[in-house]
Length: 470
Ligand code: GLN
Image (cartoon, rainbow, N blue to C red; front, side, top):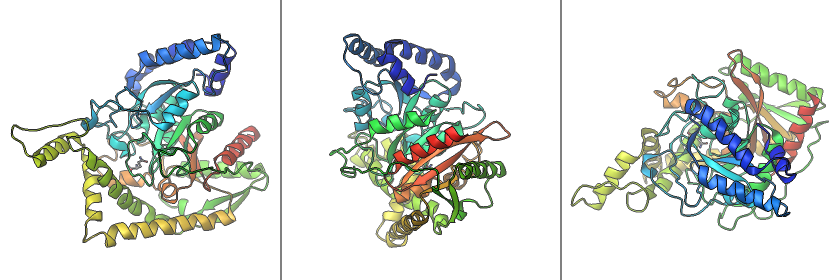
């Protein structure tokens, strides 16, 4: 598979047509996706007409966009006008997007080809894609293992070489963790850098859209396209000023002691330290930092995220969206009960109950308010750490991809697989997962770079310099 950068270049130079690129991707999808299960739907028709339009643009001598002819897969929680969007849930099984998400619109404006929608955990709740109501997605590195989640379909599609680029969403790790499990790059941008307009809300104060790719240059290209102010998202950053040029020489890389604890896989630990040592060889300074409230991140996240989800998911009432089930002469309450009872899967129901409980009058102070206070402390931890360090290096996950069924009966153990990715969302900072080698089982291992808000480009530069030094 060519990189997105190479595809766009070759399409511009007329070395290859967008239609040829699309056909190659469709062929790979046909060969591989019956086994992998990354896609919920491939948009063959609309993708072909987009590719044709790009080719006509090039043929007529016009300069095409930055993503000329690049096929991009989108997670099935992003709206794309006239196409199905299900959030991998029965409750939205036949839902058609009434408009297009800002991020998807920006891709199309730069002449990308939207090739299909990818599998995910229902409403992005999960870490393995096993919560999809429709199908299993397998890890391309080993089919007995999960691809991670919730954006497991997007990660697997890129890792299997079916597409050069895919979008996912990350509320507590759903881009970085599956990227790490599948061995590709994944970026969770600074909160507010990419518009959430047209992203189905899970936990609005945590959700961000970001890319998956096989090369850091492609992550940068995609991020440069999808980011930017959008008046339709009130949390979108106006006039963002990005930090530039992290010089690897003398760059201070912080290793948080709370992230290198017992419980992390020995080989994962070794690979992360090897990456740290290599960075040091290139001139970076390794320093110890502390993020003292890390241990409270997972519990605080499950209160905040579930509270927001219970409110956001109240709209699926059997009246306004998708599925509607009723008996003859049913009351409104009966419609709600029947539709929501049949339409949502068990993890979604668990979150709605948890969130409703923690927001209820008698428990609000004890749970929701307390969780928000912890969130502030975690934000403060990072602010102090970034006074000492320019970038923080951690494992993306405590262990490589687990097997199907290994954690489904124990939600807490599933929740804990995001222990290193969740604090970044609570603090609103930028996080990127980078592949850093293989486990003895053959499964990919990844490191995560955490950095201040709006430092994405500086980190891309750092990673590029680092990779050249290897
Ligand atoms: N795995 C976490 C959860 O289940 C994070 C999901 C996400 O980032 N969307 O909530």
